[in-house]
Image 1 (spheres, helix red, strand yellow):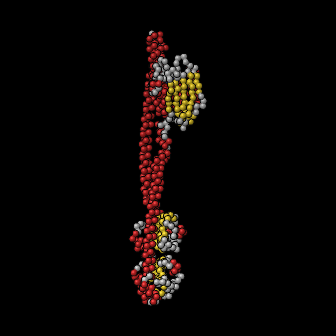
Image 2 (spheres, rainbow, N blue to C red):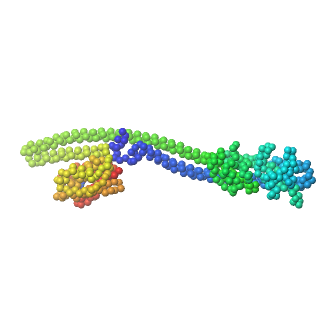
Length: 553
Ligand code: ADP
């Protein structure tokens, strides 16, 4: 029902009001589009910023850890070296005093708590002494061990790769230094175990973020320590991680970092010992603030959409209620007008009847002046009747429901000229039509009534003894099709052009040109209701060109 009401009230509604779906779709787009763009931009910028921050955090963490490891091993190597150079150690080996070996090794462990076990071998790598004492490895040959090979070849204090110590399962590295006499002859080798877990004390002191993990790899690519990595934190099995060991510093994103998922990782080498430190953070944790922000935006979007939908619905209901009220009051007004018109016309017809009786049956009883009065009374009654009919037509055009369809202007004009054939013949008018006139979208009956008024005016408003000439043609415009009626009539003064479109506005007295002054008001109302326009170009004495413009869609 509301749709019908609307079509009666409005000639052409904007596209979005033509259906509820369109209205809600438009409202949805008005809210959804900016929200989507805002969310996308926010996500893009925030994600970029978060990523940069993470890369920076990881790089700093990896560098700090690398520095710490470097310093730790530098210190330990120097410690081993200085111990190996001790006179007491050299003398103990030279004299082959086993008790002194023990004494020296004991002192080495005591003076540096980070060394958990100390060894002394002869130049061939055969164990001379170990502290704490362990009879099970007495006389053991260490010559094939990596630490022995390392210090033997480089002649420098050496840090081995990490390995798990059998007796306590601790992950340790061996730091070794050569013991030589004053001539530089090798007397033996001094070595100490360093438990990697010692580094944890340092990390516990500097660790700040729960989401950041740190993994430390020895020069064989074995993960020797994982900080904050939980139970399954060994990432050394990942092929990308293996490729990064001992590489120059850098950052990258790895899609599936074991149980950790997509991660942003920075790696830094520790040149002193050939190790690598990697610091990494999980994607989900990094972007969690952004997802929280997007969830808030989505929530606002849903609330705004619901509010807008509710308002739209209320607004539509109110609008339809008003429309219904308006339709009802228009209908009442129309009924009222019809009944008034009917009531007014009845006495008018009686007046017309009686004046014609007076004029015909009592003509001989009246003098000339009496007959003239009777004629004038009859004429006035007829004019009054015509006025009422025209007013009714105007009211009808303003309020009736329209039936929009594609209308061929040539066909409509054809229908109008045939209906007006008697008037055309009577005035001996020359009607020239430039076909084709085109197609418009309008109410056909309303269009024909407008054309009838325009044509009849063109036939009527000519100078005395002038044969009317009407030229009809059309042109395409931005808004549709414009139909022109150019006549050779008396023309209209510029200052009168707007006035003649008003109701009851006439430029001529009834004696010269009969009429009620409603015709052009009807044409204008019809054009407006069909979504078109109406206008005139004219010059006094040079004819007029009226145009009506109608949309094609
Ligand atoms: P009516 O013709 O009944 O007087 P209209 O509303 O049709 O009423 O016209 C209003 C006035 O506009 C007319 O009285 C006339 O003065 C002027 N007019 C209308 N059409 C023309 C025309 N083609 N040429 C000159 N004047 C015109």
